[in-house]
Image 1 (cartoon, helix red, strand yellow):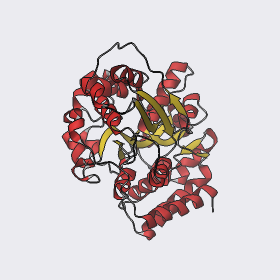
Image 2: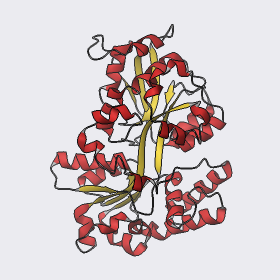
Image 3: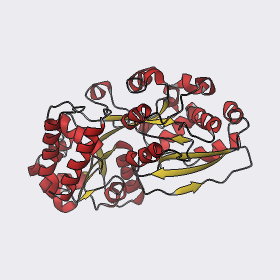
Image 4: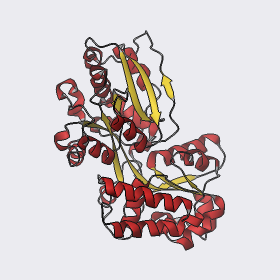
Length: 375
């Protein structure tokens, strides 16, 4: 899932036995480089077996570091000499990082499995990465509302219908009913301010300071009822019942639902994509221009685009992947879940995040500080 946790390092153990399918392009792509690969990704955002199986297939040892937010990876990339060969930024951050010149243009001849990608997804991504020159989509998700079914029913007369609208979050008279059972909102202004803009009927891509201020004012009104601003804790707190509502990422909330079911703690979690529309985002695979092992990076990216590998990752993290041939291999309950693979009518109301100019980023940051501190 797109679970943000504090940075840690998992140096995976190189397994000598080959077992499983060997991907010939992956094994060959490393060329004369040292058989090492350094990956920077979100925590718990890859199936447990993916890296060990890649290591078996390629003979490349992977060091897998994780980051807490797009802002963290951007800071490393802009500073230069990040030490990473593959990074996984979200599309709107990725778009402006392209403008900053931090990525290596892709040699597509070294990624033959690009042919497996959904052309419609590639066309949408090309709006921020013209000609798909620098990046490859990894996973697709949405931002919406996760909630404790029983606690929502208790607060709203036995019904959860209100969870189908952002009214639940942005009307103080609604959110105040959940104050005592725990409300968490993502600690990311780049998610929350566009959602608020869209709810107000404004352009979620707006750069107008007055409109952005309106969105911030809307969030300030619900601030007294928000227990936490966090981008990872809500997974466990939803699952254990200490949070009853979270604005969060789809796969994280679905993971919380599954954890609660596995624990048998009688906590029922559900996820809603509100009717007013919600963000749909794309996480990208890219190679920093100062990567020390670019050939190994090509091998890894190519491996992730195999249908069997993409399906295994989706089955584990509960995010949709952009490889259509993988869909029949995805578990039936996942591929038929409209919160993971939304129907066309729902997708029609979704929006992507914009690339904000620096002055808008600064405004977002200042307003977010005001919101969190209650100023």
